[in-house]
Image (cartoon, rainbow, N blue to C red; front, side, top):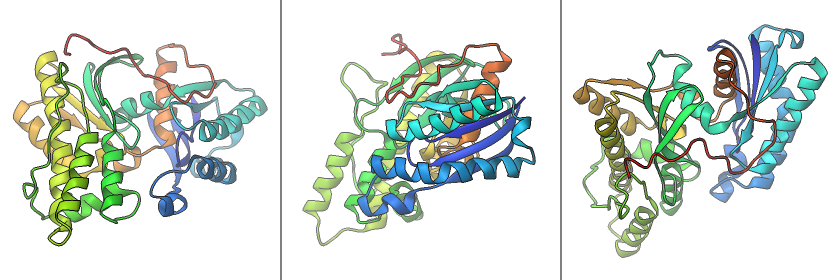
Length: 335
């Protein structure tokens, strides 16, 4: 099957063609230049840019794959979670193509796309744990099989990606902030500032990053003339990575699952990758890190998720845009 995937859940317009888990093309148009002046994504501007870009992005994906529109067997599209205006642009484009080509239209969860993205390039046995860290989501899932997931941990407030972006804004580093903090932190002292590692009462698996942002704000206000930006970035980044790795280690031990994948935009962070590699070497397990192209929002993960579900004859989500769309029920045994 040739499946065209379309992803427009937030501020990246993407289209991809896959056969099985082999990616023939994966075209992504970023909107960083549009939103940089605002320090974050403006929903109305994001939807407008999707509308301007979607047709050319899909055409480029088809041409790069070396196929014709008539060779497509299905169209897969992100249905949520995400910004409704952005989702609707992708949904309308996908529905129009599916009707025109008389092929199935497959709704796909954005979160499922991320969770299954490690399977694009690497073989990993089920079950495995997947840490999903991005600008909008921070959660840890037990992936028992395609379509069979349990939420092991989730953030109670902000995502790790949001914490990075807000920290970068406080420091005047621009948007998106995660990459700037990662770059400045290299070679700096990660123990220079004692930022807190939050623990949620009665749930030692939950993530929380709102207090960390407040701690940074307080530090910047109380040290206006003595700030070393590189050390601040390294210390702030280390606090986030510590929290992420702590929950992953706890889950691996308690569930006796020696396989960990990390997905989402923050999975491209060099310190997170290094710490995860060290941890898995100590545990003697398998670590899967998607290539950077498959970490951030992309249509290849949507098309691959649709393909994997089709191979197992699993039902697909209805092609209806939904802003909030949980992936899986919470596992309460670890709380």
